[in-house]
Image (cartoon, rainbow, N blue to C red; front, top):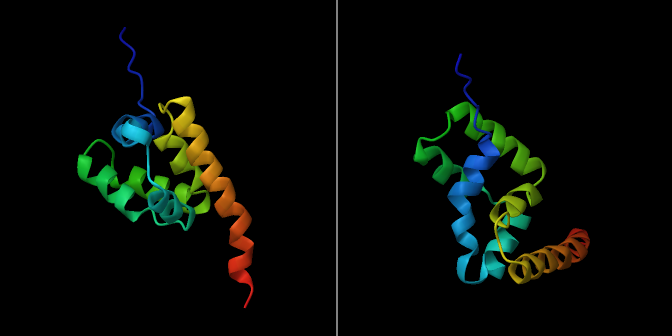
Length: 104
């Protein structure tokens, strides 16, 4: 009896997007956009790939909107240590600045 292994949608996203971390990884503008929750371009790419269903894209979209850091983690899943540190430090700096944007 053969068993089939279900592919985790996160693993598919890692496989698709990990190339973004070659040559230094995502730039600061991309990290800022992710931090603001601008994830539509990533969802469109995932949906257009045909590797996952629309339901999976919708579920990932909901998860990433609730926690955009999860998408950053996917982008950095196979990054080298320096790239990962740079990107996570940039994210932490944005976390510290975010409350200032609420001051009116």
